[in-house]
Image (cartoon, rainbow, N blue to C red):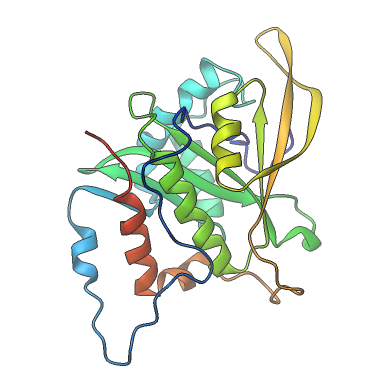
Length: 245
């Protein structure tokens, strides 16, 4: 499957698709703060459960999570796992324009989600591909749902209109997760990837993020979005929906 970022499939081992709690944020859900009000963002930086923007230094943890999806399954159509320098390059290449988020608990990264270009030509610039990967020992706890909910809120604030996910079949859990978050299936690419001695189909799903008739001239850069303290608060609240006990 073609992608400018070679992590091009979405996977989250979420079998419980009706989570007890979900992050209740949408394009218009940010509370307006009055002039002079102090937003207590310090509490969002303490240890515990949190979602934050990815750093280049997260590359080893990201690779530890991602590599098994390459070596042990057809979830990713990469054949050989990348090394740490390659992961660092991917983070640096895309994170200014597209959100890349990690979920961590007590400083340990347990999952990540990101957006990447859907296609290179300019008219596609308001559409993105999205993926989420969760550590194999931390699945079924709502991490993927929390990461995706936060990611989509950021994409809306940037001005992106469409999110697409390509999932190698069969993957009932991942398809179910995406559909529970509002994605609809738009087509199946038959026998499009050859891995582990057999052909694999890929289902494509779409989430419409915004319904405005015309997009802005250019999507906002990630740094601009993170200038709003309400975004930090939103990430914190999404992280608290995860159940780790």
